[in-house]
Length: 142
Length: 185
Image 1 (cartoon, rainbow over the protein chains, first blue to last red):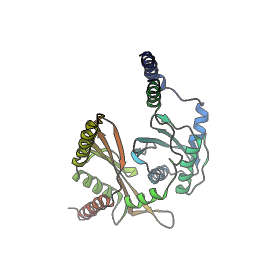
Image 2 (image 1 turned 90 degrees about the vertical axis):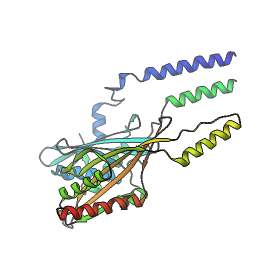
Image 3 (image 1 turned 45 degrees about the horizontal axis):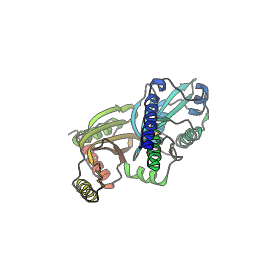
Image 4 (image 1 turned 120 degrees about the vertical axis):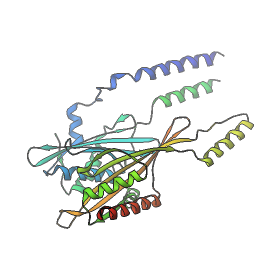
C-alpha cells in the first residue's frame, strides 16, 4: 500500500507544477533571445517597392509550403496562415513593410503548437522559398 | 506495484510536456505539396479579378459557407461552415470494440467523431506573362478545403482534403458562376 501512496503524492506534485506553469508569464515573454537577435533571423530585405506584389508572392509561397491563408491585409501589409497536420498545428504571420523608398522589409514569425519557433534554420528555409518566388535576392534584415 | 507507479509518473510527465519540436521540413516544399498545388489550382481567362472573386464567393455561399475574412485587394477569401461528423461505420466499430473488450474484462471506450468545422481558403492571383507583367484578365484560383473534426472526447483532428472529385466539383461550379457573371445574369 505504501508505494502507491507515495506515487499518488508525486503525481499530485507534478500536476500542481503543471498548473502553475500556465500563468501569465508567457504574455510578454520573448524566450531566451534578445529582441535584436530575433529580428535579425526573422527578417530579410528585398529590392522591390511593390508591396502588393510582395504580399501576393508571400501568399503563394506559403500556399506552396502547405499553409492555408487565414487573413491578409494590404494596408497593414500582413498575412497569416496555418498548416494543419493530424494533431499538429503550425501558424505563421508575415509582415511586409516599406524600408526607405525602394526596398521592402519582410518579417516572419511562426509557432508550432504552443511553442514559438526560434530555430533560424526554419526561417532560412522560408526565406529561400520566398527568394525563388520573388526572383530577388534576400538581404540580411535589421 | 512499483513498476506501475513509475509508469504512471512517466505518463503524467509526458502528458505535461506537449510535442514542441516542429518537423525539419516545415518550410520546405515536397513533391506531395506540388501535387496538392496542381489539385487546388485552376486558371480562368477573360474575366477581371474582382468579377472572378465575387463569382467564387457566390459559389461558396451556394455551398453554405459563411465568409470569415476577405481582402479582395490581395485576392484572399476565407470561409467556414459547421456540420455534423457522425459516421455510422465509425460508431459501429467503436461499439464492437467496447463489446469485445468488456467481454475480456478490460473495457475500452473509443471516442468517435462528433462534429466538424469545414474551412476554406481561396486565393486569386494574376497570371504573370513572359515580360513579368501581370495579365489583367487571366488569373489563377487556388482553393484549399480543410476539416477540423471534434470527437466525443473533445479532441481535435485536422485534415487537409485531397479528394480530386471535391476540387473538380467546386471548380465546375465556379466555371458556371463565371459564365453567369460574364453574361451578367
